[in-house]
Image (cartoon, rainbow, N blue to C red; front, top):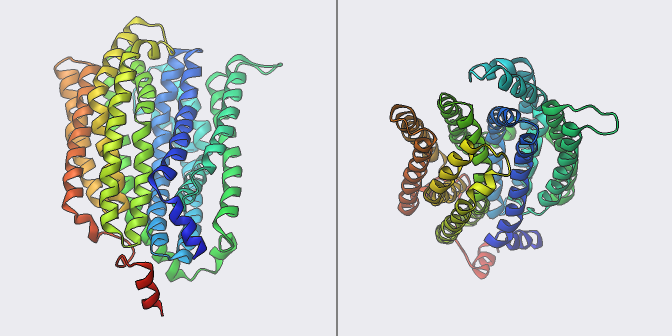
Length: 467
């Protein structure tokens, strides 16, 4: 009972959000520090790493099939007080994602060059992107384990651990990048290859630290050797529950990333300046969406836990409260970033054409980001409730029917360039956000839970039943 009470205290919006906010900031910093530091070395190198990073993001999505499903299923089982099963789910997810990570490492070692060839990059861009993807892709299994371990800790409410781990990883990455770009004590300037190596080293250190924290935090049942004694039936059942939620959830993210690659190819038709401006502005916009992403992840965990505990009305109200907070913060943040647009983009480049395009794109973000907040918060809540298939079908339809199609029509056919692409992005976010709100208000998601939802009983009623 003491363990359950401790979990209850960790499952509040504030307790979950602020560590996730800091962790998300550090993760975004981790991703963008490579782009920022390489921009001082070469605009082309920075854009190349951004392009290669899209493929890295797609590989992560395969790991998120297990990681995102694990987080939701564990949350619901903890809410239902099925603590032993929650540990079984964690163990299965670790083993499956490790194997998946090894397969992905082998795949990228073999085909990284061919994957980048699809994008029709200029020779210099292709070379830099190929070097980065080859080195980072080789260690995809490390990324897989980091994703899974973090998801497990979050679902238990241990969200502070990743904050300290990410601080250390960022420091290692920054020092490594400085050495790679500038050279140090006889070490030659390694450029993109050195930056990729620095990224890998920092991720390996992070994995050692966060995995050690996992073994200490979850309890005595968290022993890896238990996986070998699992009956096949339990293993298949647990994996089925994870994939049932994680598959559609990750399918939506996979669709998004592939659609972004297609849109990048469309932008590539507009020239290198447009491509570079796109990556710089995206790097800045990650910070605008930071609050929505953090509140969305916290809401997903909280909704899953409340539904598992039978507190469906509380879950419904918690989502709408999170939505109001997130939309207001996103709107205000987008205005601030738009006003500082040229100065922020100026941190990356002094090219006037890129500065002008980027400033207008950040102004459009004032409309785009509140729509994204709707999308992130409601999408997270629906996934936490187990309604992942709806998100998948809606996402595929809107991303391709609105974002990709309108990007070509407005950007190329009508000649609006990047401005047209950003209008298409905003339209996609608002279409999905409004339809998700209607879905949440319909309360269809109440029947989608993985665990059997128990009635919300008082402590006295629960004692009577148990006796």
